[in-house]
Image (tube, rainbow, N blue to C red; front, side):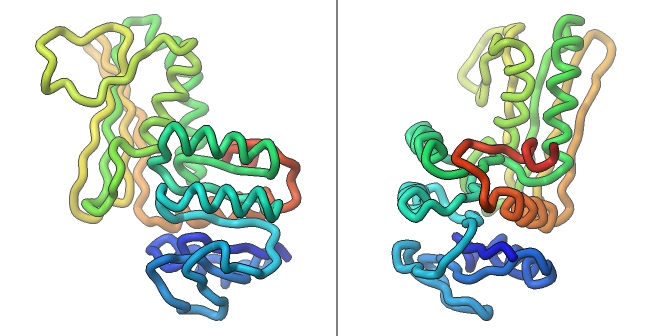
Amino acid sequence: MVKAILHGACGRMGHMIADIVSRDAGIEIVAGVDAFGDAYADFPVYKSIDACKEEADVIIDFSTAAAMEGLFAYSASRHIPVVVCTTGLSEEQTALMKQTAQKVAVLKSANMSLGINLLQTLLAEAAPKLAAAGFDIEIVEKHHNQKLDAPSGTAIALADSINDAMGGAYDYVYDRSTRREKRREKEIGISAVRGGTIVGDHDVIFAGEDEVITFSHRAYSRAVFGKGAVEAAKYLAGKPAKLYTMHDVLA
C-alpha cells in the first residue's frame, strides 16, 4: 500500500482527498501538514512539514504557493516524491521545482482532471490547422470568488499546449483595457472571471470568419481533481527522479 503525506490537509481539497483515500485500498494517508488547521481524521496533522517524521512513499500537495520552498526542500532531503497540485507558482518557484525534480520524482499539473489533460492533447492537434485557416484564439476561464490567482494555472496550461504546437509563436494577452489597437494575429487572449461557487470552467475559442469553434470543459465537483491527484500519487510512488505530468499517468 502507498503511504502518503497530505500537504494542505485542512483545506477544502485536503478534506476531499482524505475522503477519497479512505475509500481506496491502494493508498493511505499517514500524516497531514497544514499551518492553519488541526487534526480532523485518523492521522496526525502538523503545522510544519519539517515536523513530520512519518515514513511515506509520496506527498500530495494542495496548499499555497507560499509553502512551496519548504515542501521542495523536504521532498528532496527525504527523497519522497511529490505531486504538486498548487497553482500560482512564481518563475523562481517553478525553477526550484525543476531543480528538485533532478533529485526526486515530481509530478506537476495545472489541473489533475482526465478531461483537461485530454483537452490539451486535442488542442495541440487542432490549433495548427485552425491557426493556418486564420482563426483567432481566446481563452476564458471562470472560477469561484475565493480563488487567489488569475488567470488560472489551467488556462495557462491550455494556452501552452496550443503555443507549444505552434512553435512558441504566440504572445499571451491578459488585459486589453489600456490598449487602443486592433487585435494582433499572433496572440492568445486569456480572460478570468471570478464569482460565486464556480468550480472551474474553461472555454478555448477559435474565432474565424463566419464561424466559431469552442472547446469547453466544465468541472461540476472538485472531486475530479482529488481523484486525479490520488491516482497520480499512486503512480509516482517509487518512480525515479524526473519532472512528470498527468500525461505520464494516463499513458
